[in-house]
Figure (cartoon, rainbow, N blue to C red):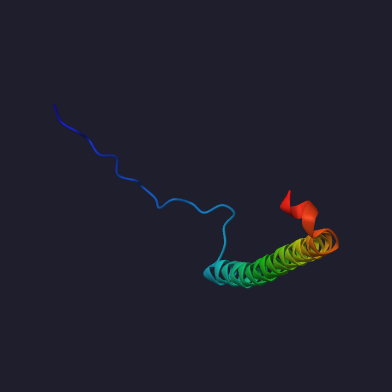
Length: 87
């Protein structure tokens, strides 16, 4: 059994037909757009990260204030009625 490999008679056509200069221009424009998109994505990432850290810090601050208030209340209760805490 013999295998016949098809030999292309002509090189594959590029559609729409474009010159090398046009392809280079499109490639350069794509690179410029890719850089702009990357800058925008990095900027958005850091904005989101900053917001997340700020929210976490605010949550931690509120938790610390609640803990401090509870400790003050506990200290007040122990100071006002030492016998009640011994029961």
